[in-house]
Image 1 (tube, rainbow, N blue to C red):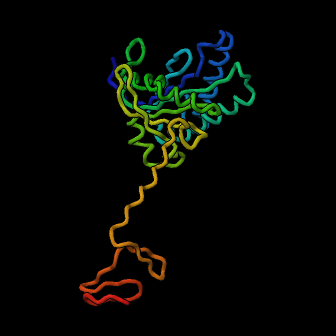
Image 2 (image 1 turned 135 degrees about the vertical axis):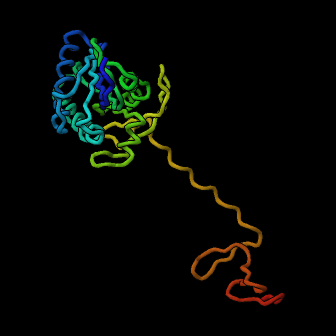
Image 3 (image 1 turned 45 degrees about the vertical axis):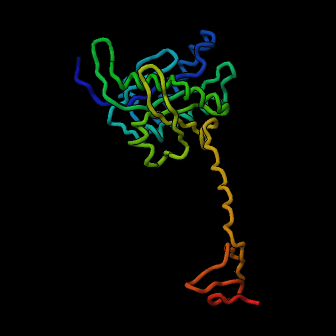
Length: 247
C-alpha cells in the first residue's frame, strides 16, 4: 500500500436514480458524467487529473492538491449548478436530474484494489446524509444541494472568498453511522436553504416604567421620574432647589 496523500474529495449523486427505468438510468449516467466534466472545465480544473470512483448513481472524485478548495467550493459549484440548469431546459420530467453534492478533504491511500481512507468514508456519508436530502426536497426549483464538511467550512467557506456566498450556508447536524459532526448546506440559486431559514429575532419586551411617572422634554425625549442633579430636580422646564416645588 502506498503512503497516504492529500486530496479534495467531491461526491455527486443523482436524486431518485433508483426509481427510474433502466434505459433512463443509463441516460442519466451519461448526463451525470457530462455535466460534472463540464463543471470542472468551466471552473478551470483539470478533469484528467481527477481519480473517478464510479458509484452507479454517482461519482466519488479524488481531486489532487494542484486544485484548491476555494475554486471547488465556489466556481465549481456555480458551474455545476449552471450545467444542470442547462440540461433541465430540454430534459423531460422523466429524465429530471437533480444532484446532491458533497465536498471534503483529507488523506487517502491507494492499494491494489482501489482507494481507502477515513476522508473518503466521510465524504460518502455526507452526500447521503438526511439533512442534505431534506434540503434538496425543500427546494423544488433547485438543481442541486451542496454540503461541505466542517473542515472545508472552517478553512475556506467562512472566509468569504470570491465566488463563495458565506451567508447562503446553513449549519446542520449529521448523526449517522460513524459520523457525528456539524456540516454546512447550500442550495445554489437560493439565498438560504428554505427549510433552514433563520427565524426573525423576537421584538424586545417593553420595559416597565419606574415609579415617578413620565416626563417629556421639548425635544420629544421621554424620561421616567424626576431627573435629579445633585440636590436639585428638573420638573418640566423648571429646576427646583432643595425642597422647593413649582406652583
